[in-house]
Length: 239
Ligand SMILES: [Zn+2]
Image 1: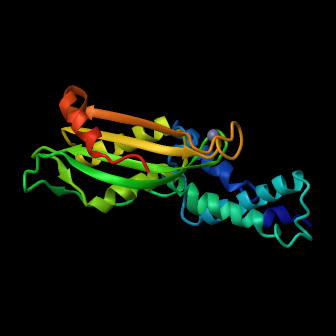
Image 2: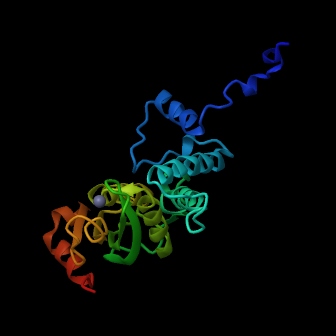
C-alpha cells in the first residue's frame, strides 16, 4: 500500500524546522539576519509558537550536553521551555515582532527648544555571550517646525524594541538614532547610553563596577559644540 499518494501538498514541508523556512525567506529577499536585526516581516502568523517549540527542543539538547539530568532534577525539568520563552517572547522579542506603532503629530506649537528624555532604563544582552546588558539612555531632540512630535513614553517603547535583541552597545545606539530620526525628523538628535555588561561582572575580568558609555550625535548636535555641551551638562549621570 502506498500511503505517500494520499499526502496533500501542505504536508510536503512537514518536518522542516520552522527556523529553516524563515531563514529561506530572508535569504530569498537578500536581507540580513544578524543577531540585532529584526526579522518580523518574514515570520508568518502562528510560526512564532512553532519557533518557541523548536528553541525549547534545542535547549533540551544543550542541557543534555551539559550532563544535567532533566528527567529527574525537578529544578531543571522545565528549564528548556523557560529559557526558550525568555529568549523568544521576552529578552529577544525585538527581533521577532514589528516595531511598536507610534503616532506622530505635527509640531503645531513650533517647539524649537532642546528637549531631553531620560533616563530610560534599557535591558539587552550582548551578542558575544548572551549576558545581560543593563543601563540607561538619555535622548536629546532639537526639533524644528517640521519635526513630528511623539509622546515621551514612545521613546521608551522604541528603545525597548531596539534593545530587545542580542546587541552590541555601539550598534544599538546607532539603530535607535536611525529609528528616532526616521520617525521624527528633528534638526538634531543626541543619544547617550551608559550600561553595565554582565559578561564583565559574572565572567571574564569579574569587574562589577565598569560601565560602558557611548553616544551618537546627529545634525545640529554635531555642528554646534555649545548645544552638545548643554545636552551633556543636563543629563544627570552618576548613580
Ligand atoms: Zn559579552
